[in-house]
Amino acid sequence: MKKILLTAVLAASLTTAANAGWLDSLFGSDAKGTVINHSNKASPATVFAKSYQKGIKPGADFWQADNCDQADDKYQNTKDAIMAYNADVGIAAMSKGLNCPLRAEADKTIFVGKSYFRLCTNAADPKTIQEAKTFGIASVILSPGIIADYNSNGLTLEGVPYGGSKNVLTAVIANEVDFGIIGTGVANPALEKGQIACPYTTDPTADNYIGKTLNLKFPNLNITKLVYTNSDNAELIQSLRNAATTNEFNAYLAKSGYGFVKVDNFTNADVTEAKQWIDEVYNEYWK
Image 1: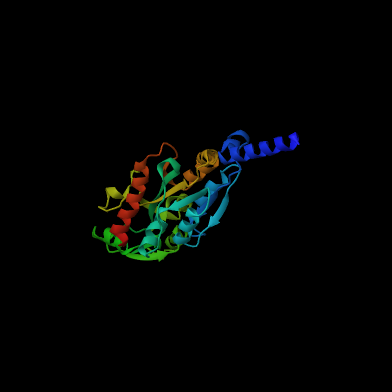
Image 2: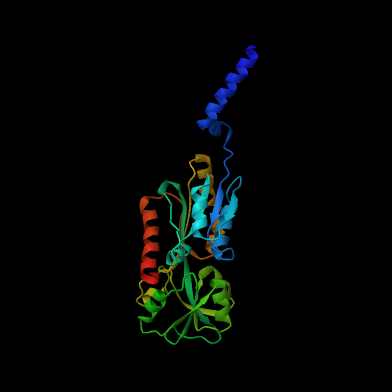
């Protein structure tokens, strides 16, 4: 009888301790996060999300959303959710009246990065930006506002939409368009092979920064990505932070042309800056 009573008391104590999180610290947590991706399945942004996911130990699930509304609903209703947020997807969704809020909080933000673009022309039949008439741009970025901004510099560009930087690159190589805005990581291999020439970049630290040639509202056009979580599990959050600093993930970022990366010491200003970027680009280029 005493043995049964002792077992019951011990079980009750362990249940209470588990609810208090004590067992997590003693034996390790079994919390397994879910990475939520709202970017198109075939986009480089999805490669980003999956590259990050690979570094999470002991592992994390991956959930592909069909749109921003679906992703946001999943994030809010999933324990230990991890959002791979693409600012360009958020901006494009806003233009369609969809709900794509950035719900990052400074203490639960894991990663902020910016990948810039190259402005490229066919290497065998190069055009100057002043000579160019057709301007290939991924449809998620192309808007009347961005074309008007470039043409306010005396240019006469017509925007041609494509399903992403890879398709823009193909069009530039095929000489279907005079110029194209291509993600740096996508452009670099073709640039190294001599298939394209890229006289400008939107990276403000580069010598050939487009802002030195044209007066644009957003010469530093970039794809801002954030990773953040709603988890309160300290062990999981630390695992997420570790995943953002692995050699494999850093190699991916370098190859993909990320000119700005931050993985620690986040403040409210970091989150505010990202939200302001989304609002300002939307208001100037899309609204």
